[in-house]
Length: 424
Image 1 (tube, rainbow, N blue to C red):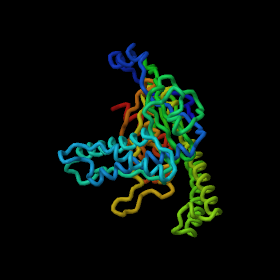
Image 2 (image 1 turned 90 degrees about the vertical axis):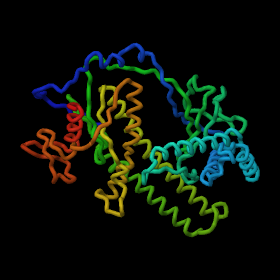
Image 3 (image 1 turned 120 degrees about the horizontal axis):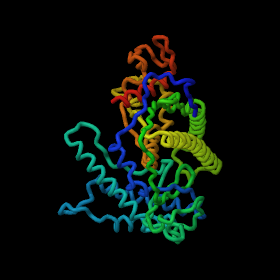
Image 4 (image 1 turned 45 degrees about the vertical axis):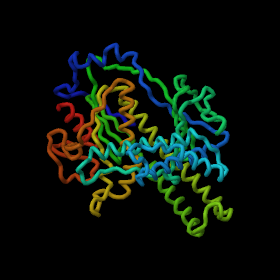
């Protein structure tokens, strides 16, 4: 991250804000001083019997998909219109399938898969009820695919031995200590691109620190620069060219590996993986491991950037103005029209994962007693912050000029976000 501080403060009028005491009484009260919130902690672990955990993932996914199939076929109610308890039938079916294939079976994992499908189905129904009369936007429950890079299953209670389902799945070796409050609570086991994680419960104390003068900062998300921040005293640039120099080359290597893997699959058309020759199976396994390794590296770079910037903002500022960065609307083609931004730019923008950063920043703000304000991005990028004039010919230029001023485009956008939200 690059921090830019002006040499002299020649601002004719201070932009600092002081809220009245009544507006900050709740934040500074003793009610939140020792308050605790329930959060989750993600811990990496190494299973001794990894195949048993893969079997549990398959069992959970199979139970989930069987329940989804019944929901999609309207086979989930009896004659009186009440929900059928489908867990016994699904458990009997998957238990027989697991025995025939020689895989481990656990009734808790199967039950949780069925219950997860029911919860998802009810959420979809509630969502569609709110859209009654609309022509689009309706949701539909879908199956879980085994081709995804991230899979998970849930456990009702984490035992004192810190090993979920010890008898059925075997021991695990944790990379960190499990919080005491997680014992006896539900947990989620996740397999993400070759790495195993367990998500457990933890209690976190709130640390409200807003007192008197409120420090504000505006954030302008982007592609060339992940985020540019502007406050009364300084400008902060985070992730300059990180997508172009670090993330995009990794994804080009992934594309090359996928292409080589597909060439081998094309030579084995119609042949299942266990029936392929040994050389083909070895090459496919090698490519899958390399693809997962590169994707993990990309994810770690983005996660590190998100954590560093989020902690920097909540440590030094009380209110963060963050515009809504609608990436989906930017990259989606509507009515087969040509996109206004290039394909490579779309890919770099999606790799930066701005929405996940927003959720992470809001979590940090909740933890440290700060505030994140969602705002509109209109009149920020092409608007000259010193006089409000819109530069229609700006295009993709990195700087914006006018009336003797030459300003970095991203800093100008962040300043517009700051001024617009501050004066509203």
